[in-house]
Length: 320
Length: 109
Ligand code: SF4
Ligand code: SF4
Ligand code: SF4
Image (cartoon, rainbow over all chains, first blue to last red):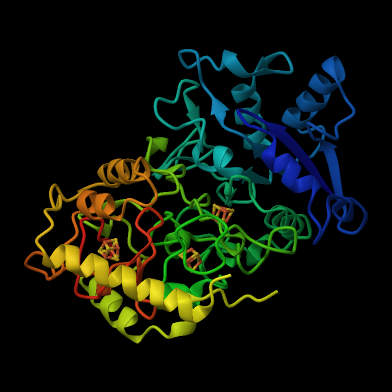
C-alpha cells in the first residue's frame, strides 16, 4: 500500500483531467490493482475545511506516511514572495509544498507548470511562479537545486501541457510498486523511458519531412508541419507518436504542429505575436533546426531531398 | 468539370503568361527580403488583400524573378513551397505555376 497525496497550485487542472482519463493503467486500476491509497486529490478528495487541514498536518508530522507527493501547477510566490495569491487549507500553498516535500518518499511534478513553470511563469510572470525544481531551463526552482526526497531521488518531472495520462499513471505505478530504481532520469529529471525519443519518432509525416514537402495549412494530410507551421517535433523529447493520445492520434497526425510542450522553454518565444504556429526563420532558414543538424548540412540536405523527391510525396496518399 | 487534360492546359497557359510578363521586364518588389517571420507575414497580408484573379499583383508584391537570386543562387527548386513534380508554388497566398529556376522573396528553405 502506497499513500498518494495530490495537490494543485497555479494550474488549469489539465493534468487532473489527463489523470482521470488514463487507460493503461486507469486511475481506478491504481487503487484496485496497484495498491495506491489516494489520501486526497482536488477532484476526488472527500475531506474539506478542518478535516483536510488535519489530514495535511498528519502527513507533515509523520502520523500518516506520505509515500508519493504529486504536485500539479506552479508554486505561486506572489505577492512579494508571500504566496498569498494561492492560499490553501488556511495558509499559502507554498508552505504546504515545502513541508510535504520534506517528508515524502517521492515527489512527482505533473505537467509543465509544476516542472518548470509553464505558461504561468512566462514573462512577465505576474504570479512569481516557479516549478518545483526548475524555472524554465534553470535548475533550482522552489525546492532548490539540491533537494532530494526521502528516497534520495530529486523531483521526478513529468512535463507536458498537459502530461499524457499514461505517462502519469505509469510512473505513479512504478514508484508505488517499488520499481522506482528502474526509472532513470535525464538532465531535466524527466523519465528517460518517455523523454528520450522525439515527437517526430513515429510521426506519419516523416516521409514528407524527408522529401521536404511542406504542409501549408492546418489539417492538410500531405506534407510535414516543420517547414511552415512551426512544428517542433524534430527537437522535442516526447513519445506523442509512440504512445498515442486517446490511443488514436497525435497532434501531428491530425495536422497540427507540435508546440514543444515537454521542453523547459515552453511556451517558446514568450508567446510573442507571430511566433506561434509559424516556423521562425532568419533570412529564409529556420532558426531552430532538428536536434543535432547544423545549418550548412540542412541546406545541403534540402537541395538533395527536393531533387530526389518522388511524385507521390506531393499527393495526399491517405485514401481513407 | 475540368478534366486532368484541361487542368494541364490551364497550368501550361498560366505558366506561359507569367513567363512572358517576366520576360517583358515586369518590375517586381524583390526587396526588402523578409528577414524574420513577422516581416514575412506582412507580405502575406499584402497578398491576401489582392483580388484573387490578380496574378500580376501577386508577382509584383512577391518580387518574382525568372532567374536565381543572390550569391547563393536561391531559386524555387530548393524552396520549401515548391512542388517539384507539379512545377507549382504551394504557398497558399501565391498558388501559381513556377519554373525551378525562378525566385521570389518569399523563398524559404
Ligand atoms: S509533422 Fe512535425 S513531427 Fe511530423 S515529421 Fe513533420 S516535423 Fe516531424
Ligand atoms: S505533440 Fe508536442 S505539443 Fe503536443 S503533447 Fe506532444 S510534445 Fe506536447
Ligand atoms: S515562394 Fe517564391 S521562391 Fe518559393 S516556390 Fe514560391 S515562387 Fe518560388
